[in-house]
Image (cartoon, rainbow, N blue to C red; front, side, top):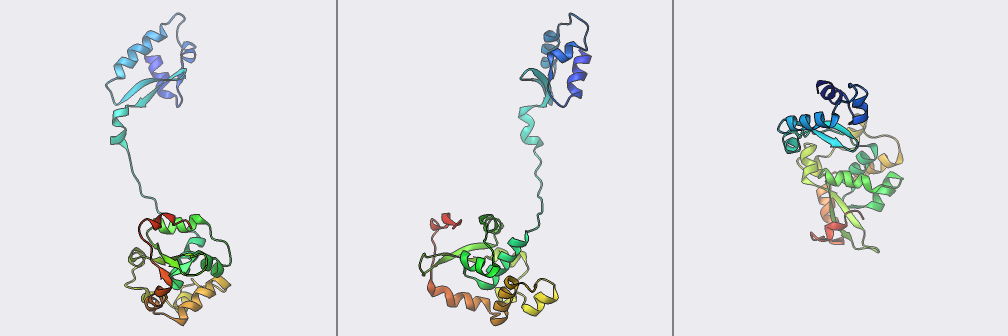
Length: 209
């Protein structure tokens, strides 16, 4: 019995009975030994269970919830996500097509999903132009995460350049110039408001557009 117990314990995979038989004296009642071990471990923290043609020790099912470990993992935003967030912050309310125009490349749906899931952007409304494109803006969560009291506290072009966050590419220059033209971003967003059709809660289900 101890040999059977050790074989199963030392194996990362379920152990077939034929593998046990190779280690035991001929004529050993393997089925009887397994039944006895199964009963012995039935009330313990881990049980002897059958898995297909083999046997293995597994954590008792009723303890799974108690042993669950949750860890938060920090992940850096991709360059595409950082650029997209910056464009939305400086251009808001802005459409997906406008974001792509500023960046100069197509925008993947996953990038917007990441920013939306983080609580940093939200649908602002639909622009009253052909196709009624959905517009995006930053949230209070965005301000809180980056330590900003209001959008007017966003850094200007010179501050971005000094921090090495503004490069010479057309995309970066585009949203940097927009920041230089008007640092009062709240007022800018309010001025665009009459052109937007505000969304209700049901309309928000179409955030992937």
